[in-house]
Image 1 (cartoon, helix red, strand yellow):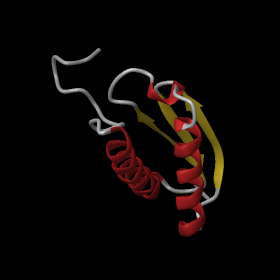
Image 2 (cartoon, one colour; image 1 turned 135 degrees about the vertical axis):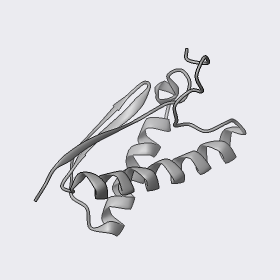
Image 3 (cartoon, one colour; image 1 turned 120 degrees about the vertical axis):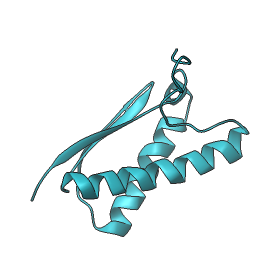
Length: 95
């Protein structure tokens, strides 16, 4: 089986430092993996993002990460009434 390692980066700052937010992202990733039958080899939560190594080809891994991004962005926006959690700043707006 192929392996891939992919990362989601926070749009602003270090939101995963907040109590519980990193755990929520990890739990969501593990839940998606269970539903999709994906084997996760490792999850690294850092203050500004999450890196996941999984037994998938890169294209399927991108689909997995897109679902994680969509799900956690929706939750984050509803809970905190803030913009998206993940993304790339617009040109000229990098921190």
